Length: 430
Image (cartoon, rainbow, N blue to C red; front, top):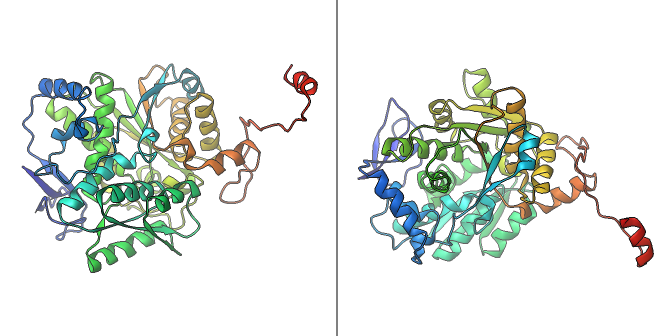
């Protein structure tokens, strides 16, 4: 009962679930997967909980455990799983105080196999590629997508082709793609220009695109919300806060919440808050200003995972923000850097883009948009070790914003060189 459907409300052209389509042939709109659900919410909750005790590979996956909620496969023989999902909810009193809240919990997607939320979507995208008989998959990436696609392609016997902006990637992320055997091409262009290039190549050469424009990536990323709700015994929080780059997660989260409400798994919708970096904030500008959506031609931020000036999923994201009565905020490089340091001091750690969530919560709480007593879950999208150079430069006072401005190391923790002398070291420690 699964179909692909044009997302544009005035079109809604339908396609077979097996069609290779990223945009509607009739109107150019984005594509989404749609299902005719007829499910018992109580039985589903019981089933999902029982699967946690199962040793079956599909059940051990924090994505495929919820497979009734994205039934696009005829069978599961094409599934490639690395036991993705299964990421924790981590509460932090220290981070909450910094944000001006009574409490906050982090849904930490950095615990995924390749260290980011991309694994949730990539397992579904790779499964569909194999089900369609594809042999080559491709993506444009500033880091996390490339690492994830390379891993799942390797595990599933697919050839991975990665296109990335030359000189605009964290070495920690590039190293993953190289290690997993992907063929990597550094293009002298920005993310949005390269995506157009890859779309043209894919059509010409029969390559399956696994960027977030792929509707099956979105289906996998829905499970971040399903697992979050399951971990809370299906009690929705007041707010779910997430970083905004290409806006695939915003699209996935809103779709998941609406479907969970329609099925009866939850009784109300949380509000979504999307946080963008100031130098790459076209969605914030659009929501604030209205009118036509305008891309940022040369996006700049040290948070490379969200350095995207023309997010393809913005129409879906706008729908989900409106459906959940959500908000969009932007934060500076300084605010991201300091929030990242505070998350680290909580013993949790994350990549720079993830820290935009805490920085955004701090601003929204100060403005009274989020109540101090609100029940808030912030999504951390990537692991601490995705960009270790950023961390070193922050704590040594050498971190520069894209415009060359030296950022303050407000919460610096610099190492100290000491002599091989126990008395002098004891005096220092005293």
